[in-house]
Amino acid sequence: MPDAEQPFAGKPQDLEQATEYAAWLVGAIVSGRIDPRVGREAAAALNVLKGVLAAKDLTAWKVEQLKKKLLKEMQNSERDR
Image (cartoon, rainbow, N blue to C red; front, top):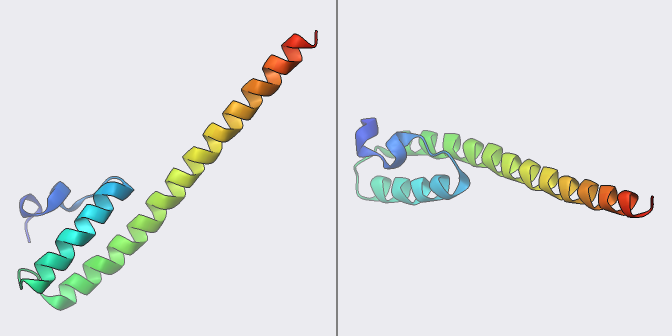
């Protein structure tokens, strides 16, 4: 199926888009627009992508938490001088 006929040109960039793409994929398989074997392969690849995107989001969240903690410690250190 051409990229132009797929949501996000077949390349979801974040978890929200990956979830939307998964919903579209199910509909495309059920309606017969995509062969079930192709759909299974696409779903497997999408699951890998979702795992990577989830790990990326979790890492970004952890970095933000550490930044906040460091900033708070720096502010406390300045106050103690």
